[in-house]
Length: 308
Length: 314
Image 1 (cartoon, chains in turn brown, cyan):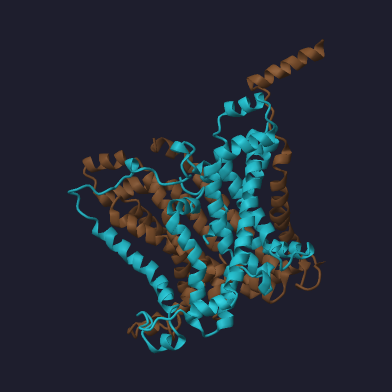
Image 2 (image 1 turned 60 degrees about the vertical axis):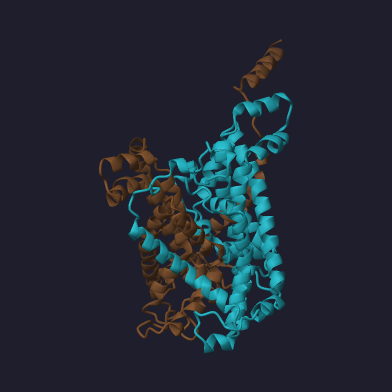
């Protein structure tokens, strides 16, 4: 009797949705396996290899903290690479963030010509980083690029070979690639701002500049945080364009951490040292995004009220 | 492509990023209808000269390099050196394109298609299944798994490339297309699951229950309920990941070597060494490599734009 009764209860439970039956873990298993094997295992693996000696051909062997000791204490370039990375990250941010924000606001406007320009602004996103790299390599060449084409003597012709300016050139080219993406984020963000906020401000006599600082900027705070996180962590780990355009030359002037890791690992065949650099990169990246997350979390509650 | 893919270390807002209440299940993340747009200039308002100027200046910055590669790809090398480089050649030629095509361009193109199509297909299938499990699972497993997946978004691909290289060698897959497909599937899963979960969550419970009452098993529910309802999200995710894989450079650079398995971005890089001072041919290859995405952009601009900002914009 009791068994029958409990059956009935179960059946009813199901129908009422209280004890609904969900899919089995089998559904998620393939995704978990892929993600575990090729993403989580490598994450642990990079830490393990940082304690091993491995020149690409042989197999890795345990050497304790030797790699760490060498990379941090006996390799002056590590600190140089860190400094270069800092310059690149900060420089990229200062270049990209304001332009992306202004462009996004601009693109959100209703005017026909703005819609037309927005369509064209997207074009850089259609090119792979290698394509962009080759484009600028030609364009910045002293023999057949803009410096040869334009009659301005003051224009430098050694954009990519002058170690004093190549960092700024990289910041510009990387910005060229990514500003359109961030501008799209801001465009979408601006379009979420209720139009009546602007109407009210106009009635109160607030001008465009005032409206920008008092309405647009505060309302965009989430977009700003999202975009900033992507920009900062993105440029921290950025590799493609700098590799294609410079390969670290001239004089390692733009050999930021990801490039330093690649050259150390796959050109100099020292994967142990390269893994130390990779771990440092992961650590900085995770810290940075955690801090940004925290920062954004703390503003969340206020904004819910303000945005209402 | 955008750091977006590689560095997804993010993003507090990503979880709430998609607007679940999109009317008529439109494409995720598409701009809202005009009703809510601020700042449209009404008649009588004075034009914003400053903004207009900035807009046109930025257009010049964007267009100049693209203009340059297009006109240069229709030149001869001699022409490039002899005449002003910013003025189109008076005797345009398609010879550079022919040299690129004769250098196995379509072979590399085909490799890229194979890698992109298989990666995206598997990612969509696995992410949809995982999202269904995460949303509907009655145990704590679903929540745990979701937390793990969210963590995965923060893993920078660049920093794991060395162990991935080791793993691929050990599996005997080095220098095969598999070496490109398998890891890229793995790294695409977290963001894809995140976006799809946000969509599957909005399927009303009643629909699941009524299918259960009709005796449908979990696969049947996945196929006839979850899949059709999640279509807009799948489309967005598919476009986003396709762009990432199509333009990806680091995996092919590290995990492949021979000409047979070369994909387009790597082939561009190799063309540069191969053609040496043949700048028009190098740039013709650049132009050709962008043509498929350009066509896609012309045909389905709204979808491409939405796909690109998938999950990042409200």
